Length: 375
Image (cartoon, helix red, strand yellow):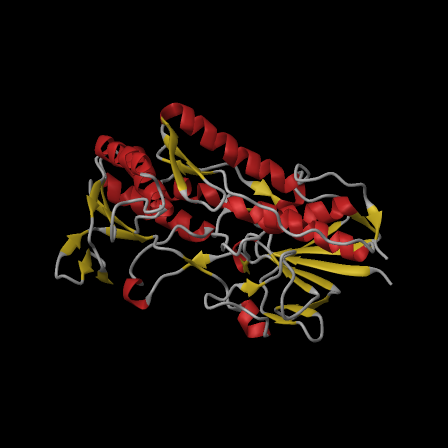
């Protein structure tokens, strides 16, 4: 009987997995499910929120022959019946790849804030930020992680008349080296980004960020970028998940509770061989997609699947279009002193972003294998 494979989600991980499976297997029925007909370059969404318009990529132009494309939102997954529901439509599967990614994690106290974690949210933010910049207003960015740093720098560079304030618990870039943090500060000084530290947010209002110590940071708009959550679909389906709702997987990205389900990218609670948890990032999503695709292909062709082998190399942080920070790290993502900055780093970062996009359509560098028929 023909094996039916469904990949849920066509972000970096899902699209890479689908195309790699199509390359590895023949004689299977494969469907890629996504909620929109376009591929979202998520690592460019801070650019979209700044008012820039990166090129649009149609999924139909990026999937290999033999992959069916189904556009719809996943409303339910029934792993016992091996079914996925898209509204009134029901799709059956033998193997499911869960790649629904992550979303903005915004607490109730910050519902007045904008986010840059999704295409629509970023586009809407771009319109409102442009209007605020025209009024020479003040924009607050809450969160001193890499997303907040990239957003603050992009907004300040794109809109020189906009006053940008980064509101954060500690020093921006807590996972960076001292050298890396100093460079971020220098760029912020050059761009006029004001950094507000020791800030625990109590509430986001339409006109201010209220801190727990009583301070109020005036802002015509606020962008919330303190971290990511994941869709509840896996938890509702009864898959074993961690406290954040990510699917618990083994070393081949296979669900620990449901062996016909694999989870990849931000949706998976994956670890390195030494138990160090992988962070949510494009840098980890692509290797996990390749590993899962190869593991599925191995299982369906009677071979032994190989575990995920991954080590970190660097963190790439854009600081506008003319500067960036390449922070080198050890295998477990701990920062070294070594960094690259300036235009060379900006070119490096852009090459990484373009390479990630190319990888989704031609996912082959991790290993080579001939196409095999599923048993």
